[in-house]
Length: 595
Image (cartoon, rainbow, N blue to C red; front, side):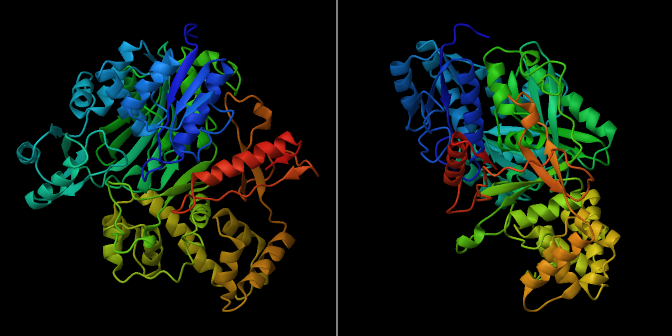
């Protein structure tokens, strides 16, 4: 570790915004925890009072100030830190750090950027530099021209050819971006994009290609690997934050996966990133052609997802790497508790976004390259069918999983499928009801047939359940398969009994019958890496696709369950994370086991 580092300033992300939310409280808190473990004094700048990282006992000093160069310089004068961390506060912190560097403020106060250098950050953020850098090693990027005037935007469009995607440089959550098919649309989009940034990017459209993402970690000794592979359920053209994301990748074969993993390592090494980053690809499975869309030299929403999904604490490890540790020094080498190797998964996870668009009058429900979702959930299971059904119940918008939301009806189904909205997944369920084939839905949505095939399995099993007249007629193997495919007792009762009145009574009847058949879930666990007590790891999930429990059952009279608030909504967000964490910590101090 760098012995000279005694005090570090961490840049937070400020107020929650659409496109930048609780994930940066998580990454910042992890970084502060890692610094504290090393006995380093920590200073945090973040005006958001509702976060964990601004709570007592996390950082030594907290400044509730805007994350801007002016205020950071004032903190430099007063606190005189030795180092600064830029990668834990989202795009806000990254942009602020770049400005501090360009204005010479970091040099003036002799503050060292820990982890990935500002030059490497600028190589990933400035499109021109990024493309030049990747051209040096023959890695393909989308044909792209960075422009600073309308006139140049039209020239760029002419040289690349329509359709195009327009994006703002240095913007968060895809702000100001969109697709255009002619000059009129280009003019509208470019004018909008210039209102967010003085540099915009005119790029070839790869709409309909697969979007694949990797979290990559690299230490100072050049030990580098991909920690998690993720695949967007939606094809390119829908922002990752607007998309259902599944890990590990589902529709790629071993050869395709290996190709992209090798490209990831090659790219990250060449960019000189130390710590954690993510790399996004557009991938065409028919031709095995690819483009690197972007590299985020910072923690992101995907990294929070990947940390929970794999049990590999990316932010914690990235902070240790920034202090000069190598991966073999984090956790315990040669054990599953070491940060030196990537975790392997024997389960699937998916992230599903939640929108709150019905709270606004007149807002377009269409989703695309600019983010509108306000929250998300993660579900864990042994099959895609299980995680998608569980996940849709968790977001509170499709109360009955993938099938059974008969109150949702679409006037123009083909339009709904080809122009995605926040309700598209339920439109797919209705399309199966109306006899659409997988091929037809694929043509309209460009969603990979692998995913559509799994959704059709759920639809087909619903039809099977509807052939029974009474709950007690269902054989044990049919009931087990329904549970394995993620059907809730409530859903099963609905398809078999079709009750008009007391759903709750039917639900209880179904549950009692299922238990009588001996069909019960097993408790499974995600092992966590580099944790203080690996045997007490706390990420648990229930599945009907396993026979034994991963952990023994402890009868414990002194235990307390804390109910969290679920996916962020407008009017309910990170403040309830703060409340839950404080409740759990207090319970623990009083000697209770907290759940």
